[in-house]
Length: 524
Image (cartoon, rainbow, N blue to C red; front, side, top):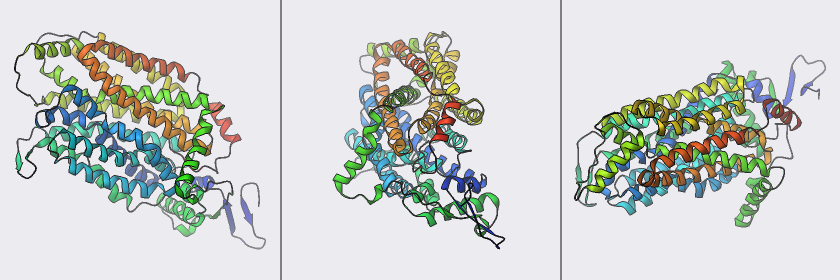
């Protein structure tokens, strides 16, 4: 075998190449297949973010039917994040042992079914239980889709394609208010006597937010398993066949023309899927987790977990209250004043009332502002996708976290409502750093521990979402300004911590020391 992985037969004009999976992926190139696969993964991400954040639009208009208090709306909004916290670790392990595609396919279908059931809930308890079960299975796709997307792209284009795929999170924040605007103003109430409910528009919105999962499930039926997973489990011929499919789609050539005929077998690859029984499962999880809390990986584990906690707590924590805040601003009558002044005034008005009728209407201006802010949010993902290859992940993280943190503080201090909304929109763009932070984590951790490292950091992010949404609900009732100062400050502290990350050149040197052909996970 020559240094470049070629075996030449004397007297034979043809050259049979044996290569690593990463070399084969480079040979498959980049093109239409990768773009279509990214779009499919993007639909999954869009469904995930719509399912997670839909309650921000549903609960304000369901509060009369379900008899919700502000505190109940807070913990109901946290249910999707709680489900992900409790189950993403398990889904990550299951995807590493049983495959990415079957886990996503099964989880999305079941999640959509439970969403349909939740739309018929007669009261708060049944609604909370069914939403929790739907979110448990939604967690399956959210824990795996980044891995699945990354593993279909070669090293040269991986960061860029993951960033573009992540932009569908931003697209989801545009589609969600569009669908809400289309459905919630409808005036219908179909009685269902058996359940003693009126089927009103908000119930239809619960079902509509599950549609992306249905579409993605159909598309996934025609998609193959990840070549990295197949290669990691000694299914080399199947892995090579997937790479040939990528090659054929990109180059518009026959699979038989693919120059690489076999993949290098690696005895070091994990055989986690051969483990059976509860003891084996626990042992497998422990072996992949304990080293993350020992040196030299401990500092990186703490850093990635803390940064993701801060980003998720801010972007998701505020977003679930976003429609409520915008609705208060849209309904405000009077001169220019700050966000918190408007919220405090509406709270004082409600507190002084003796018997106020339940109001579950939503101003159409709320949907318009949500769409505009979602477009800004989406554009930031796309801009980051174009810049990441040229500037690097570390400078973008530092600049974006610092700027969004300052804008969060400025949104409270601004006396003009229009300026406050603009600053608030920029404040929400810190969410564009989630995918970047995952991409950095992929390079920080050795191959064997990457999947669990990403699962842990994302799990801490979901903890942040849950804590953030509840804390912000408390701050909106007690001290509105403190919420903006606290979460804006957290983003600035995150930016400071990101200065400790290795630079682009250091990460490249690290990659040359650690061969990439052993990678079994790429959850960027």
